[in-house]
Length: 212
Image 1 (tube, rainbow, N blue to C red):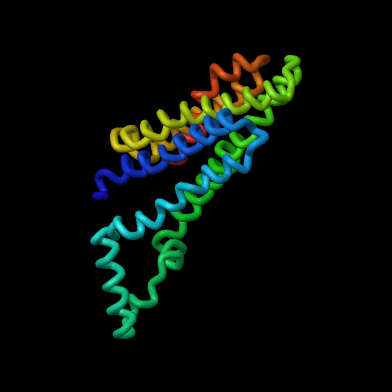
Image 2 (cartoon, one colour):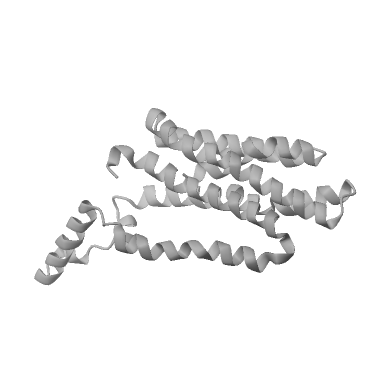
């Protein structure tokens, strides 16, 4: 992908996660939660496509040029051969940006994206308070995952165009603020599964879409 399309490409790639989680929930509903082993097998099947990707997808020309240049530098014993990506990231020129970006990414993944992993448990707990049986609790938890990831698809695909239009920092800040607001509203200011379901697409759009 050329540099001018990198934001859109990242958004498209990340949107695959929404499809994956959505269909995982759909398959769970089809085979029932008790048959989780079948869900696991279905989830492992796409790994086969890695073989085709390795065979059919070519490395970018820019990456090949850098690789070949480093090979030549290594053979000649020049200074460029000593350059390593991780070392460069923490070098004087990039150290500050690397630390700030890593801190933001850690915060997003831990506080926002990580918190979404508890949503099925929250739905089961709320369902139990509403008098739902275990089967219905699991069914509603599956629907919650589908709503969350259905909303996240719009966040994933929307992040790229917003980043191109307003800049990546502005888009990141918008999604971060949205996630910080909508997440506590959804789980601290609601009293029923219906209310949570209404807000879950927004939770997915902001808290998962930001990872684009």
